[in-house]
Length: 413
Ligand SMILES: [Zn+2]
Image 1 (cartoon, protein in one colour):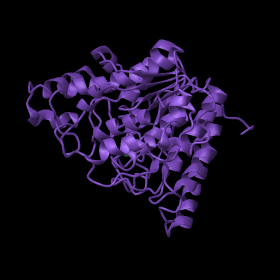
Image 2 (cartoon, helix red, strand yellow; image 1 turned 180 degrees about the horizontal axis):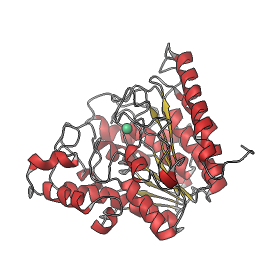
Image 3 (cartoon, protein in one colour; image 1 turned 30 degrees about the vertical axis):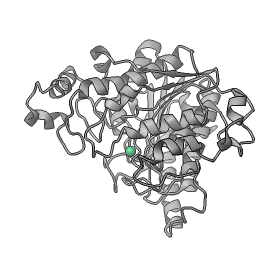
């Protein structure tokens, strides 16, 4: 493996390429996952998955003997119905085969601009869910320590309503499976630029599933929720945490508040496993959001989360993809960095020439040539100070109101 890696021109600047073995991990992928596609011109474009997986491969980041490339399976109706209603599953199936009147689709959040009906959408969606179930099974059984369901992360899916490009909620189905099979305490962390409303709502009353979402404030962006006062209900009151950030938020402010909140929440909750949604639409080049993060944020967020997983839950992380609409410029780079950080493999900065050559002819724009954004590439926002102070104040509010509600919270914090 090492010979293979260091033989690549593109890794010539990677001085660490020969050190250490990768953490045993699985990447869940099969080209069949690209069937989850609403329309050719829809922003949720599965091309990004092919671009990301081929970049991971081109870097040699699947070569270590401890790493596995595993296909998804198709989730069964019984599995889907752990969180979705049978009527919803039936409607998705029938609408996707032309067996139901599309005029009724709005009742299920389908047939809209965001979530148009497409042929075979039940099977395509159930395969995305099956990928995240495989990712969960492999980690929970101890076969691997980390897994990455790269096509998963459909966090806006509700019990009986599609929303925000999400039909079935693979994250919620996998978490429900973990609860049922293992009774494990699950910490769900979502750093997609949009609030993880579907997962939050499905476990809103469950104190064994803590949801923590950091996202652009719902005052400015879909789905319009995710405020610090959404704390959960009944037994689950205090187990729903939301850290909305200001538009134009940059890496430093993001990492400051996430880094200050995560260790205390984890220490109080004591998870058995972390489920991590890695939507990469907080990037400055993403066309659907107003945040100004760079690749550093993704790499550092995974690293911080990894440290917390090592401290509290044997390092176990089940990761998924999520949003990400800068298909050519950002998603492949962000998710390569996520995979490298999850598996603890060093990765050089020059993009492999073979990857650029493979895709440049198909790309509508000039492909990047570096994996990481240079700090100078994106000048600071003029609102920096105001944005940082507002984010700090939001964190302070959350610490004051939410953390004392966690059962494990104590004076030591
Ligand atoms: Zn998003």
